[in-house]
Every structure is written in structure tokens, then in C-alpha cells.
Length: 608
Image 1 (cartoon, rainbow, N blue to C red):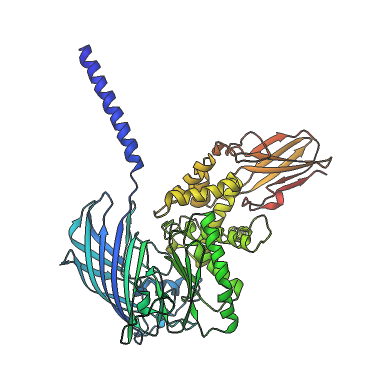
Image 2: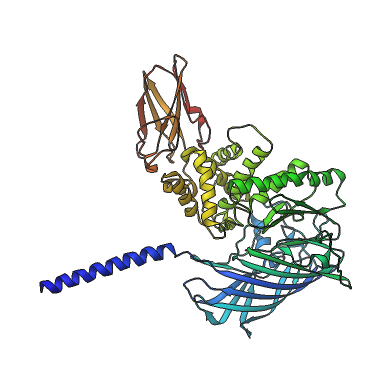
């Protein structure tokens, strides 16, 4: 009996060890993401603004699930009277000035659409239904975990009048801004399918490779995502000057592009584009396409911004991670500025500083959302906010601006939003904010403050290192907010779960004050709900100063600092006291102004 028991115990121990080992192994390999390869051929009628397309799509199901349905986005269908995008714009309190009621007034020849004529799964027709901007597909056979399937589609499309981002004949006269122009497979991840109707906010895509052929009027120059495969057959500034052009006969040119490891494909075309190329010493070519009919002052801006764009490329590569492609294009088009894979669309009638600013922001998006491909519909602050943070820093560096906090502007906006009572939680889906203003502030302003405030919590050097680690660990993936937190934790050694929760999942505000100074004793108080570590500077009556750092207990550590580090402060305690060695003249909380304290009036105390 005893031997049996011992044998059983040994087996249990062995099994336990094996389970532990296997679980540890599996935990390292649980991340997965889907993969797709697009081959598309489109024939464009530039007079009718219509095109016919053929798409072959090879989809690899890397998920642990068998899929009995797939979904495509048909974004152009949003540009029709009565669409959800139209109705949303008509009903929201503060409509986008570029949209307003314009969709409701589009004529049949001005609307956008993508009509799927046929769809086959591995050569056999499948049932599908178009519901607004989503194509719902019922598969003949489930796509099993680990299996690849080929979809073949024929479709017709019409380019809408330029309203928002995509479209034809923009206000600046750009013929075709072709973003979100093709049937785009929806993302499936650990949260399931992501199929929100398009209302002109954010996007998400499946990582993969694109092979795109465009047949278009020979007078048009095309630029966008990917590398041109037949430069000598199209010319227009792409060709090698040392080789002979081989332009085909006929009214159209065929443009063949390939884009490896991207999750979207944009192109733009116009018959009045100038095409400049700036070759960087690191082997990256910067392409600039803009209309030759621009006024001289705007043409000068487009020339002047080119070397500064190279400086931006260098800054982002050095401070986030190396740009992995050999080409990037800045193209006049769209309705403001919008980022895409290996390229951006920006409006062209801008002063130099304006053109630089929009280029800096859109290029920074290459890192935040296109290489670090977070779900910007669910977490737009990770996209717009981080982009705003790093592009502002780049501008300060390139133009040698002075200032302790380049991102001070969002702090002022934050205080206004808090006082107005219109702030919304960062976990709100991008489409579901009550106002456009609320969405914009949360995504751009409060999102950028997430990083600038981290400089206060873990230190500027750790924050910079954390961004690089985030890029190293999660580029070409779909990171989540927790992934950013973990990158910063691993670099700093500081626990940050409390910060991610408070700043992104609540509307708690920060308000610390100096409650009293009695002799050499200072008492601070936490008035707001959100706890923070506290930096304090004390000036003594003899004119000397001493800085103190009070870590938050939840951090389980403190940032690198030259200040005197005091005992940590447990968040539940409303007050905290400490003594100094000299007689006190003044006390000041957070002179860096990196902490988003909503009431600065109680941050300074002078002994009378």
C-alpha cells in the first residue's frame, strides 16, 4: 500500500512537472495573427471615375479556431445617402466640417460603391451578402486552424466625390485619392471578428503582402504604397535614367506595385503631378508627388519640406525603431492628412511649417499603427496619441525649440475638457464617442499625455527606452495597451498596472495639494481620485533647495532621480507628511508640470 502510494505520488509529481513545463512553453507561443496575400488587377476609367477589379486573396487561418464565415470591408459604400456614415454626421452634435450633410446630397454619379459580382472559395462560388460597408460571407467549408484558403472575387466600383479621406476631384483638384478602395478582409483576432460599419474614423487590417496592378490613362502619374515593378514601362519619374524607356502603345499604362509585410494599400493618381525623389544616404528613397499647378509659394513649401522629411525619417528611426522599407511617399491628396502603408496623403496648399507639421504627424503614424499595428478602432489613443507625442518631440529637435515639455499643449486641453464635463473614457470605441471633440481630445491629447506623463512616473530615459523596446517586441504585430505597459515595466522595473487602469479606463483626475507646513514638517494631501508619485522641491530660508521624490506604493519602486527618495505613499492614505533638515521658505509640487494635476493653485506653498 505504501509503495503504491509513493508510486502514485511520483507519477503525480512527474505529471505536474510536465504540465508546468508545457504550460510555460505554451505561454510563450500563444500569440497568433492572421495572414493574407492580395493579388489585385484593376482597370480604371478616369472619365467616369469607375474601375473594374479582380482580386485573388490567399487567407491563412493562424488562429486556434475553425472559421465558418469571413467578412470584408467595402468602405466606399459609406459614401451614399442614408448610409450610417451619412446619418451619423447628420445627427452628431459637432459634425466634421468636411462631411456635414454632403453625403446626403451626393448624386448617383457622385456616390461611392463597391459591388461584388462574384466570389469563390477554392474555385467554388460562395454565398455572400452586402450589408452597408460589410460583406458577409457564408463559407462552403470552414477554414480549419492552420489552413490556407483562396478567395477569387470580381467587383465593380465607383470612386465617390471627395468627402472624407478617399475620393475624386478634391478641393485642390487631385483626381484620385484611392484609400480604402478595395474589398478588404476584416481582422479576426483573440477578440473575434472586427466588423464595425465605416463612419470615417479608424481602420484595422490583416498583415500580409500586396501585388497590385493598375491600368490607367497614360497621362496620369501614380504613387502610393509599395515598390514599382515596371519603372521603364511607366516613366513619370520612376524610371532609371540610365536605361531606355519601353512605354507600351495605347491610351493606358499598366502600373505594377508590390508591397511586402503591410496591412493596407493606398494609391493616388493625377495628370498634373510633379514627382520628386530624394535619395537618403541609408538607402531609403523619399517620393514627393504634388500638383504643378500649385501657386509658387506652395511649390516652394513642397521643395523645402523634402530635406526636413529626411530628418524626420532619421529621427523616428533612431528614437522608435528603424524604418524597415526602402521607400516612403508624401502625396498631395485627400482632405487633410492621413497615413497609409509606406505613404501618406496630405493637402498641398500649405505654408512650409504647416506642410512640415502634417508630414511629421502622418509619417510618425508609420511607427504607431502601421508597424505597431494596434487596433486603432478600439484604442485610437495608442495610434493618434503616441504619434502626436513623438512627432512633436521630433519637431522640437529638428527646429531646436526650447521648452521643458514639448507636449504641454494637450495638458491645457485636458484641463478644459475636465472642467467642461465632456471628457469620455479612453476605452470608448473610436466610433462611439458622443462628440467629435471628445474623440479628438481623448485620442490625440490624452493619448499623448499617457507617454509624457510616463516621463514623470518612470523618468524620461526609461520612457524613451520603453518605446524602443515596444517597437522591438511588437512591430509587425497587433499590440494591445497591456503590451505598452509591459514594455515600460520591463525597462523601468516599475509596476504600471495602476497607471494603465486609472488613465485609460476611468475619468479619475489628479489633484495633489500642500495641506500645511509647520516648522520643518510638510503635509501633502491627495484630493483627486487618481494616485501618483510626487516630486517636491523645497526652498529653505537660507536660499538652498532640496528635491524630494515620494514613490507611489503601487509602483513597487521609484524612477531614477537625483532627488532624495522618501518612503512610498500608499494610495488609500489621503495625507502624507515628512520632515526636512532646515527651516522652510517655500514648497512646490511637480515643477516639471508633467503630472496632469487639474488644480495648480494648491501646488505651491509659501511660509509667511
